[in-house]
Length: 215
Image 1 (tube, one colour):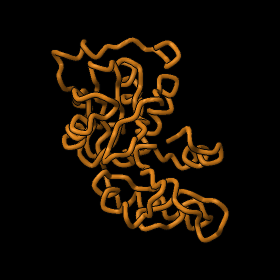
Image 2 (cartoon, rainbow, N blue to C red; image 1 turned 45 degrees about the vertical axis):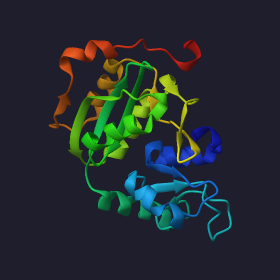
Image 3 (cartoon, rainbow, N blue to C red; image 1 turned 90 degrees about the vertical axis):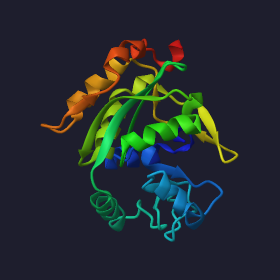
């Protein structure tokens, strides 16, 4: 998805700390027709919407079709949605078959990670939860900041088939679980507990830190 965006659109996401995992690609569809899917997949905003009523080519909208790029209502709308969205989990998952790490946020990591496996996200059916920090405020913001720090390891050329449509995976990194954990520790709220899972198997997810060009 990111490679479809204009530089000013990427800057907009960075300015408002909106992670790609919170975006739903609306290309060729209306917001109304995607609403239930957006809710089920915990996507707070849509991308590739038809131009807003201002007629200036804005493409980011809420689940109800409200443009979030128009000033001043857009940024206020982003803040309101985040307040209503409530706390969430930030998690690190790993796939041995692909040697990839995923960093994401969700209402419940316990429910989300099995969905990744069922979907074959990133071409993998062996996703396992490695770490999770639960019920923190601004989970999406924390996820965004971790992604920014791991950017040089981000994989952008992997997709998976969902309902007959190729979906680009934007939250995959060619790095070790240790590197992802280091960034999670640096950004998790003070006093929050990072649960370590699969302790006896974590060594299996110590993949090399390799930028895409080196894979």
